Image (cartoon, rainbow, N blue to C red):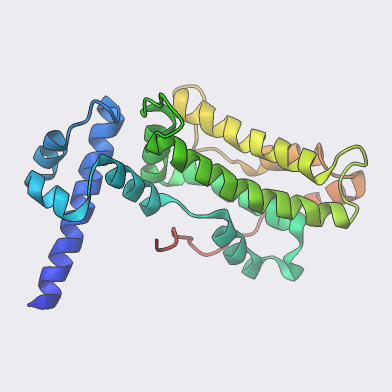
Length: 228
């Protein structure tokens, strides 16, 4: 009986989060009331407050449910990259991040909410804090990989590791922005590998580019967001 009660509580929490995603994407975060979420989830407001202190906690839980920190992604991908070669790891990190937009509707929906349905009016807004945390997590991993690539003398000489990481971040973030804001013209369900390889060829030496072209993209096992 205790296990059943625990399972039911967990299911109610998931149902509330599902309802919050739908309402927040449709109306925006500030215009979504807990009453609307409760009605869609077919629960009481009290049930929402049992699981979440407020709307900010709801938003944070939505992000946590789909967010896969790049440090965890790198660790998982490294199991499939011989020698943990940083250039190949960077390629697969970029490719996997972009493919999630096409393959994971929940991830795409939550990213759309955080990036385009939150009315961020000041630095203290919860969406602003969430986006900053995700950006810094991604930037730390990308910069680390670019530094390792630079130490192997695989970057174009004029570029520093910081230059390369800035370009990678702009490439991925730009595609996220286009897919989420203009889904009718910038589709997410595409083959991202050629685009990623083309972007990387602009950062690395010709010798490294030729090696990269000979290595097929890795096919890691299904990756899931880490528990938070």
